[in-house]
Image 1 (tube, rainbow, N blue to C red):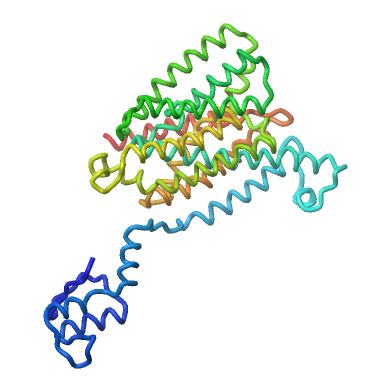
Image 2 (cartoon, rainbow, N blue to C red; image 1 turned 180 degrees about the vertical axis):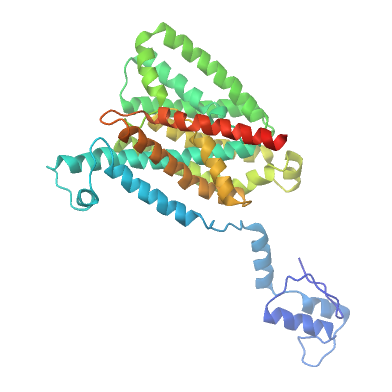
Length: 395
């Protein structure tokens, strides 16, 4: 935008630097600032009032580039997650002190069994909980933003059902599989489900088409899963253990292979958060703002599939994190944009997953409750409270 202030008329307020104020003062006095003491025509006054080329570039970039500020609560949340992470390494069937933890991480003794438990078992498990919680929180927030429904989770895209169908198919044809093969089948099933759901939703940018197509595809997949499980008792036993959702099988190899995919999905979600936020205003208004609704929807679905697919491949279909963490993030964001809310959702989801894993390992030691059961025990009451609060607002 260019300041057209002439003969003392007020401008648009874009020029605030000293040089720009001098230009405006010279223009209002009818003096050509390019020639000391000279008087210019209307055209020369208009050209003199125009900001310089660097100022114009700054104005254009400031209006185009995303203006994301770090939420004030983010450092506190990250510090809290760090404390919970240390607690996850110390607490379990056998509690260890901070001194042993420091030795295990800095100067490990290969012959020390306690240090081996910390480094080889608890550390990959805690890192997997961090990645899964952050990934599911981002995918849940993205899904709620796309559907404009605060009560949906990533499972509505059919990703979990596709992963379950792929795992059951692998058990049917190959028999008992190792953890790496199970993760590979789950990831491929989640990716195939995302592509098929996008094709079923059509080429348009309608946000209602995505959850409808996902729900239909999930129903079909789960019907096939039920048939296979009933026909094959061995597959039923293995599938039942995987379906609960647990971090017991999280290891360094699986985490190293799948964590980059989850992190890439989180970064993609942050990158398209502004476009998704504009799409939330409506497809017509989003198109008027220069968006391509179909392209934005495809990128958002890709982010959801990458984050949820990586999480389900590591720990199975873990629920309620993608539902609870976005609500907590929106409360802390207090009206901030989708990108800032997403930054808050990451540590919230990671911290909730770590706390649930600690509770499952510590409350029933030496046995443990799977992560999915603990989250269901926590998430079901929270889900009912959310429904109650929404119904109160509508009344």
